[in-house]
Length: 340
Image (cartoon, rainbow, N blue to C red; front, side, top):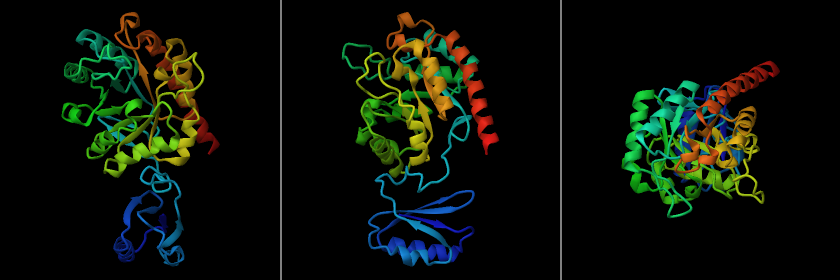
């Protein structure tokens, strides 16, 4: 249930209502926006008399919420969430681009790519230190040494870093990592999600291979319910009958999630396509659809990459793409302003 208050509600009346609701076993989550205040009620609200609350002079309306996700629900939090990451942000009209190699392979490799994506306008550096792979014989990442190299690249370029965490026991190793990525296979690793909810780190939550929107948002709910509001949703393609591409990028998730949730939305065309030649057009489509950002794999020598070389852009192609994305983002923003 949500209670939408009128402008400038009386403080004493509001405190009285909150105390009464809590005495009924209801948890009250206030959200103060620019134009209105919303009280999100979590718990068994069946005994709460909607008409009684609606009659209060400082209450604008009362609505029951059917969706199982509460904290992630736009009805509870009408204004878009903006997540601060270092000297940049995700959401709030900013086009965030997280770019870098699938895996950290060496100091020379990482610094070469980090310098290139920084020069092209990327806002964050992505790189895998711990790599979940389908085969136990594939390269599993440089682990702690990979994180050390990411931190070195951050020190040189100033780019915040994004890297994947696979288990709650690894949290101490990620103290200085700016954004913790939860991979598609861990989207429903609930013990990991609960542990991330106890942190205040920004979490990039990737959609599972076959997850519905509700399942995805319920995974986000685990993190939010733990007290961590810094969740970024990342669509990375879902498994369909199509085999020409690695996965199928669900562009429709952008407008759908805009209606369902206040959380920022990032798309990963690299894992969706699996082919470098397809990534630029898919990235452009994502920004045109209104995504808050992208995660793109870049490698200076894809033919010799230790993981996912076929889906990595070379720096020259990434540079051209960044310029094109800037034009598209400006055009979309200008169209939105003119239509309003």
